[in-house]
Image 1 (cartoon, rainbow, N blue to C red):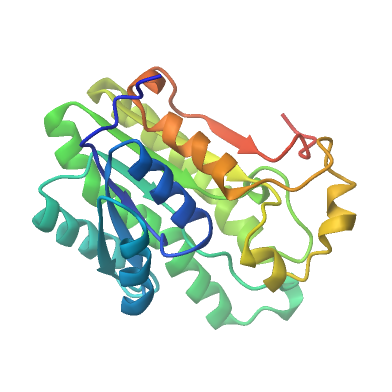
Image 2 (image 1 turned 30 degrees about the vertical axis):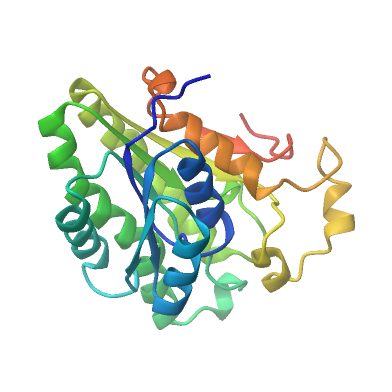
Length: 245
């Protein structure tokens, strides 16, 4: 199936590792040109060397206006952005009562504000060309809370409201806006959270954890020409674990 992605220019936030890396690699395999982003220049360069048709960029999404500045820089370097994938590493595991003010501020900038700024900055040039794809990579915690992930539960829920709102505003311009929600997927994030893979697998209807490549396939399809009538949706890739609809 030709997904119509050859030559498309993609910006993937947080793409030097984990799910962002898998998404960038999958787009590259379809012939897209990928802007790889990391706060660490060495990691960005390494990922770019491993992914064909990619260009490394350095950006700390926790900095003020980081999303907007990054979009402006990428557009200057590669001419335009056809597809934006917002993606940020999850905040640390923590209960609500243990959180400090600075924890909320850091998560706000990294999870929430970086995505909002990037979307607002990328939309005008998509509107001008009457084509674009915006994909928010979040978590199943945006629809069904995960215990001890208070920050993720709070801010990712909010991003769903933004996704739906922006999808309505941009639909008349032939721009789709969707969210993709990874469940328990084999990445370093699970190690950070201390997840027992064997025990978690027992709670998943498919009986196993997901692979980054499976999640990336969803991201690639939503960015394709074939997904031109799908917008305003939050789609989980979780092996059927979520109980909500």
